[in-house]
Amino acid sequence: QVQLVQSGAEVKKPGASVKVSCKASGYTFTSYDINWVRQATGQGLEWMGWMNPNSGNTGYAQKFQGRVTMTRNTSISTAYMELSSLRSEDTAVYYCARGGYSGYDFAVWGQGTTVTVSS
Amino acid sequence: QSALTQPPSASGSPGQSVTISCTGTSSDVGGYNYVSWYQQHPGKAPKLMIYEVSKRPSGVPDRFSGSKSGNTASLTVSGLQAEDEADYYCSSYAGSNNFEVVFGGGTKLTVL
Figure 1: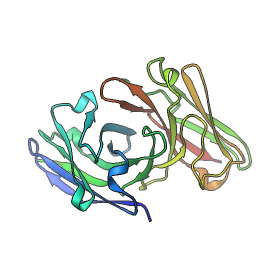
Figure 2 (figure 1 turned 90 degrees about the vertical axis):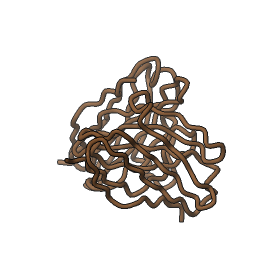
Figure 3 (figure 1 turned 30 degrees about the vertical axis):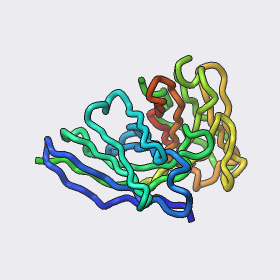
Figure 4 (figure 1 turned 30 degrees about the horizontal axis):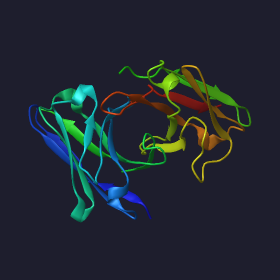
């Protein structure tokens, strides 16, 4: 079945970087964009950006530009999201989500990766 | 881009209907027919319920429907069931050079 499986929980110190992976299976990885969405505890969803696995093209939310990098390895059908200069406010669950019907809706989601930023 | 505006809570009794609103601007909700709705149960990943304003993915009950008027989109849940109790989020394409998407703040739906 179509699924996205993310890497495990991370604990980082302020100022460090984190890289979360998202492995796709059950479909052609290069056929759909991968988006990243985060959710702080008790808060709403926040879109971070997208990546086209075929071309490698990316688009980032203005809030994260300069701090986020989205990449992929097509040979293993895996997308990556790296966030740098971490601060406590970056503590959240990070989801990868596959584009669905229009490209601006997310039909398939990973299980989420908890990133905790703490000194 | 600012988040879309949703009421923090909504409620209804089993069998009733409830409508959740999602207000944006002409730069997002009002400018494109790319409004989506997601259902999220505690501790779970979101699930796509409506895309392109009013279309339902396969497997989503027809009790869920979406619409849009101007800068406000709406999700209606008819024939409320206990399992509909969850958080609901709207999202919209917001244009720009980065093809941005913006989410609403979420609405907690309680089935009384």
